[in-house]
Image 1 (cartoon, helix red, strand yellow):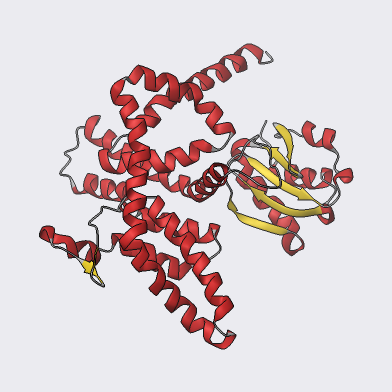
Image 2 (tube, rainbow, N blue to C red):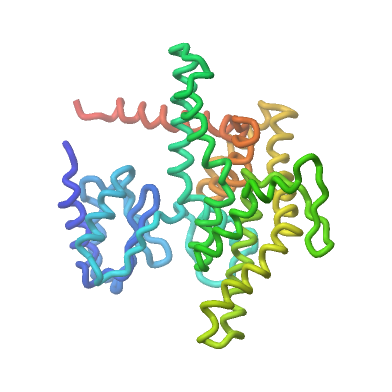
Length: 358
């Protein structure tokens, strides 16, 4: 029986205490996340019994209502009913699953993983779209024997490769939202990394310097860390400049001086170091697979669900899988953890068939 999404949204709002009891509404890939003003007004048992609600998890004062694939539609319905009376976060946030949200000090590694996951998560729909378009091109050439030189196939391949060719720009867009800094300035800075005019300076092995300092010739097309680090630095520089520069002059000199400060650091230090660091991290997984595919499958596939619990899987996909796909057209990490997902699907299907009501 089809779920009436409008009614489900209305029932959810009713059982969390009504619109007047709602403070914030957001969603991730599977959960509607609601922060309420008075938890005593929430009817938890009735909420969990609603058709379409798989379960309700309370983390850090946030009611995470697991809805699966219909979460986008329910979020839209809830947002429409709440209107301006509630703080609505329109962007899909990172899937933190059942990791306990704790206040207070967090480890540096935890903050790093959380930040990278939050930045990469909004890009996943684009990664899926490009992946399916690439699959479509492969199907046409392999199954239907369409020549790879066919212009339609070439266009499909170009579209599917666009995300990875401009990945620093996409990451910069998401990072600017995460660090709450100027979007236009952020895009200008990260776009420099893939600007053909900039990369063309290194043509034929030419030596490039800036203020007498050598600029390293590095391929940034599929990099992640340089964009994240540079936008984080930009956000800090902007905050500092806003404290120093008088109000009437900020609109002119904050963008100018922040860009002038960050881009030299990006091309001279942050960019090369970020690429080398990302390659080193990726090489750990690649080397493991090269040493023993069976060992890699056991370690990565066996621990993947644990990584999901702590939200680390998104960071690994961003730092390892994306560069691998861009460079080689394939990825060993996805190959090694995919069987664990297939096993879960098979187990779920078996339970569904066994437990269904005839």
